[in-house]
Length: 242
Image 1 (cartoon, helix red, strand yellow):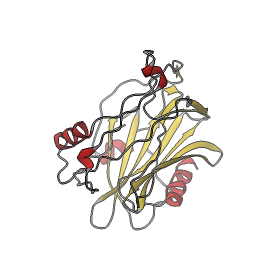
Image 2 (cartoon, helix red, strand yellow):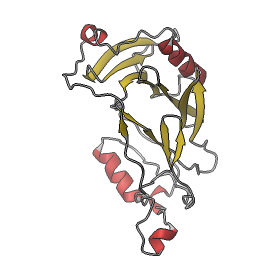
Image 3 (cartoon, one colour):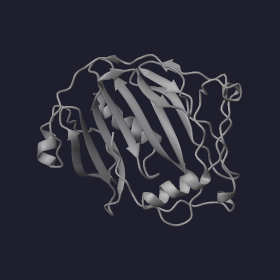
Image 4 (cartoon, one colour):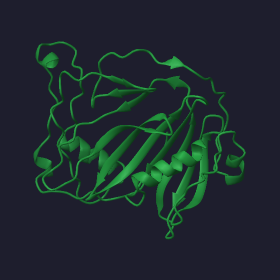
């Protein structure tokens, strides 16, 4: 699932270069295969950010020591994986086969995809600015912008091909005075859903992932700015499901 990339500076606290917290597990200490990945060093985070064109100061957030007793959790069609988990998991099962075809960035052509949905509830301050697809049989992306043409959120309509859907959970240990990322298990119109809240200053960017078992279609509303509220994301998905 591709997400539009934006150039941005990430603000930050002093001393960001001074720490890199490694995730260490009992298994790693005893020589067994560790169940969790090590957190990347501050230097690697900064090097990767520069390679992606991110300018300005880079804030490298600390990560909590993982709960070594944490294990993957099944929630409806989702498999919730603890942050950094690399232990064994069951093989996914195929629920649909999609024939590869070309993608398109032509609005009229994307509208002809069987996955096209006309959202019934979009806040009036946003408008559809483009529609794209990497594979017209597999997914479409509806990109919404504000009045200044800044992209605010993307709706993904996906033909899910395997279950379970893997969803990483994360620990939250924000710097002093910062809000924490979090995820919630929830439901939308009776369908299991995962709602993510990604800290952006003192606000959140929201992401809502909902799977419709009857059709095998997965709907994801992913905000790139804090302008879309969680309640609005829910209303958008309800409109897509109706």
